Length: 282
DNA sequence: ACTATTTCCTGGATGC
DNA sequence: TGCATCCAGGAAATAG
Image (cartoon, rainbow, N blue to C red):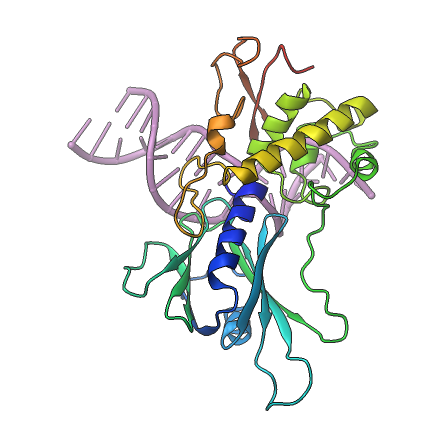
């Protein structure tokens, strides 16, 4: 499941391999696809554009694009962005045109270098969109929530003030923090010793500081290991991540806590599996 | 204005 | 072996 570390890994890999390349043509599958922009708009923005950078914003992959200038005028070439959300099972893969198209391929970008960038997403929870950046403001795509690796302690603490929702739900709320998903929410709460059902507003300042530190630590470590590969997650080069080997509660229901040997519990919070140690987490 | 629940979607696992 | 059912979950939509 692509969360911040997995999306960061994919974005870095893509940036290394295709920054500077140009998009020659775009194919989008014809069935009603999960597009946030119309198919015509996506094709119009992408075709002929040069990829300047690929980076992560929240759980989104942002391709910063430079579109063709208008008849060689001395004005700044128009900018745009291609935004990709991988959803649950989305993959962006660099492939040779000779490689057979995988089932559930929804988009193929032919690159000037001769390679193809392919978007494959069996479960179709992924989303594609384009953003045109007006030369005047030049801001582009922004996630609604704060980046968990950039927010400071004061702002982090303020996010949860007066919130009655369980802290687990608050961590998953992308309007508060962007990039935290089910795995890293559970892992951070375990490392901070906080039960997922605790009301966000009930956490003390000390607990919130511990949670912030635990979240940063777990996300940084996961990025170092290339993310968690649970089912079919792989990066842009098809490599799996290794952070799943560091999971202490996620997917470990009934197995002994690595700290105190108490069996790990699993409950449903906000419709999501939530794993915790009933002894280590208060 | 918040919070909780439902819905979308398919492959793999499970059960009878 | 085969078929039905369940489950995974990000985020938008809907309900309360």
